[in-house]
Image (cartoon, rainbow, N blue to C red; front, top):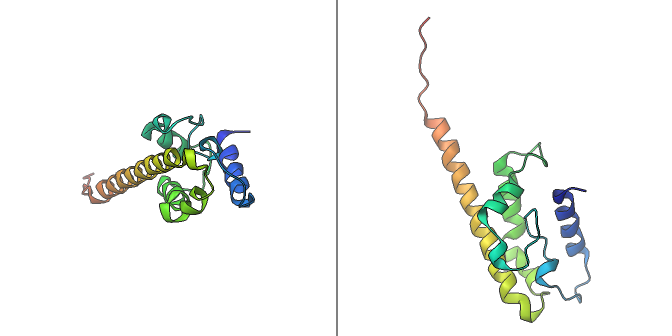
Length: 128
């Protein structure tokens, strides 16, 4: 089973888990090929490689993948999960979520700039 399927299945399990279950940092389905042990292991390069991989979601554009991830990781939505995290690990999870959201926002900004650059390139007329 590939990393994307594991990631999606872990989100399903996390959503379906009983509210009384206490979560740890390692229980969070981080958007990385190799699950991090600490927030310092969550990198922009790793997130980009995972989210923008062509090995999954071929029907979605990079922008659609980034937006879907931003919805999932948005702090207002993630607070439901955060409330179930063990108190001693909550700061690490908050830090990790912050890193993920910043990286996703940066990816979206880069994608928007790239799209804008392509759409503003003047079309040359070719003479035959």
